[in-house]
Amino acid sequence: MSSPDTRTRLLDAALSVVRARGYTATGVADLCAAAGVSKGAFFHHFESKEALAVAAAEHWSATTGALFAAAPYHAHEDPLDRFLGYLDFRRALLRGAPAEFTCFAGTTVQETFDTSPAIRAACERCIVDHAAVVAKDIALARERHAPDAPWSAEGLALHTQAVLQGAFVLAKASGGPDVAIASVDHLKRYVELLFNRSATPISPQTESP
Image (cartoon, rainbow, N blue to C red; front, side, top):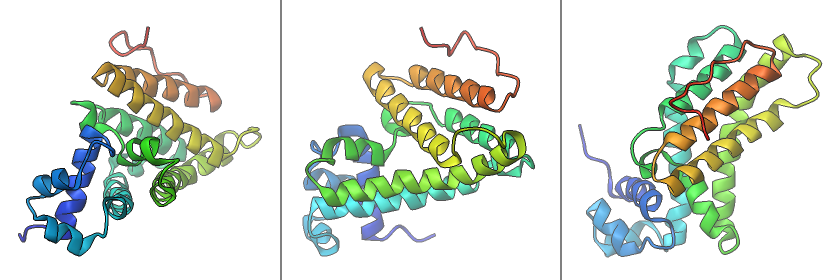
C-alpha cells in the first residue's frame, strides 16, 4: 500500500494537531513536524495556514462522511431506528482523550468565526452538510411515526449537531468523555419522547449530575 501523498499528510496532521492544540496555537512548523514534511512542501500545497484549514475542513467532511456512510445503523429498516442508531454510533465514538473524538470543524470555527470568513464558511458547510444527511432519516421517521409533529427534520438534525458540539466543549472542559456521553444519552431520550418511543433507561454510569 502506498503512503499518503504530501498534501494528504498535511491535511491529516491538521485534523490531529488542531483538535489537540487549537487552531491559533498550531503553527505551520507544528503541522510540518506532524506530517513529516518541510515548510517548502507545505507552501507548495497551501499558500497559508488559513488555506490549509479550509481544505482540512473539507477533508474532515469527506473522512467522517465515509465513516458514517459505512456505519452499521444504516441496516435498520425503520428510519427512526436508523436515527437512534446514529446517536448510538455517535456515543460509541466518545472514547479516549477529547482530542481523539471531538470535531475539527467545531474546534476551528470557535476560534476563527470572526477572524476568517473563509474558515467559518468551510466549517459551516461541514457541519450543516452532515446535518442534512442525518435529516433524511429524520424526515422519513417523522413521516412514519409523527406526521403531525410541529417541528422540522432539518431543525431536529441541526439541534442534534448543536448538542454534540456542546458535548465536545464540555468534554474538553472536564478532560474526558463522560459528560459528553451523558449529553448524548439525554439527547436520545429526548428524541424517543418526540416520537413516543419507549425511553432508554437512565444509566447510573453516564447520567449527568
